[in-house]
Length: 384
Image (cartoon, rainbow, N blue to C red):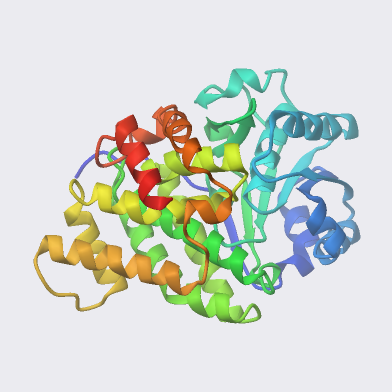
């Protein structure tokens, strides 16, 4: 068997209602009692954090709520959050929210303890030293950020840059599906499709694909594809929400070890230039990227077809085609508007988007088929 190196969060708590005993969970594991909670203002104002905050304070934690996180967080947001945590004397960091909040929490945990600058961390394995203890608690079933060593930051006006390092892997992830009930249908759909992309791209990754990531990706895709539409139809369907949250976490574990490719490379410029949410950006380019990659990954797509279309028949290309058609049908059934033009993207912006996508070299190297700038432009045109 090939050599495999696999990493994930050392402790997972998967429990509906875990927010009610969050303080006790953390008090048993961590010594520090000065906790910086990283989230966004919308969640804070909504009252969704009240139960968790009450549990933490009841267990003796002094909590600083940093609620300045925005989607596609820019550098100044990360640096301001880290400064607040440092001034507070944080001993523990909790990311509670969507992928952006958890990404910022990772960097706060590093920056608040060390002396390295944010600019020095961009890239792979450039983070030095250790971090503060870190816990992640997602409120959406999408990014899988709670179990990945990756943080994405918006740099400059229109670029998204990754930081990938072992120090960004949390000490604990707490999955409480009750935090995801009631999410709007569009958010549920976009984040769920994001998680499906993670599973698909991990399964077809040209680098580091391995038996463990394959196992996780298949089970993630099964859970996500089965429960996406029920979760969209009924925001209070706790069983569907639990399955989506578990599927997103499994997909996160998969792509943390077998990294994603061209879907993400083409999605990032849409977020950076047009501020389209990450999950939706992935959904907009997914189908044309799958069709582009099918030339090089028919076997993998044929295998995944058996997850989405049990009993699928035909030769390898036919089953690969059935897989892509099944994905397209699932996405269409969510009711999302799926053309770039529906989200403010203009035709004259497509060449610049293609140029931007080619800068995502750390992602493109994982794609099963080499992709040129002309290919990227063609995909954007198909998605337009």
